[in-house]
Length: 223
Image (cartoon, rainbow, N blue to C red):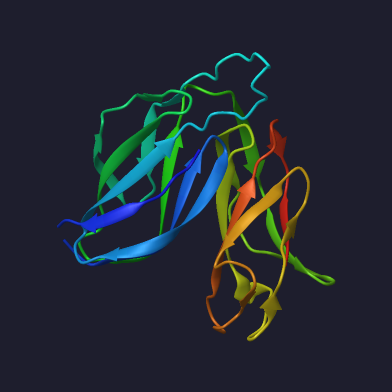
């Protein structure tokens, strides 16, 4: 699958997108951000169902079409329209352009945007995280006040944000991230490496890959 975004301003308060997190089939694609002078803007997604490579003399079954049945924008954004209308089926080796008109807050916005695309109903898992910890060296601090509950597709990537000042001190540098099993790290915002540049409320968003089974227990992030 190949995705590229082009964004054109439409109508309302100024929008400054730092980056675009696009979720599809349990994976996350981090895309370059953009800006719009108005709160209403449009995203164009060229979607390609790549043909699998194989030796010419080997017979193989044709790959099923990729089917997009639902697209969501995380708050504070709202999808106004999608063209062509969903569902959209893209056959093997074929492409489709999906245009999404989005409304942001009227007072403007600065930060990332998350877009989630869903295929046909997929088997889901239940994740309960009562405690979220940050770890560094011998230190370990709890950073959430309430537990988190997720209903996800197997191996889906989800986001967790934490205020780093609870563990780090000014000018501390982070080169790599690890998490406890059964989770995996898919990325961070800001991207690695990063430095704690503010003494009060430096927030980092972690993109975490869920397992393919139900889980109840802590999430520990080593920085």
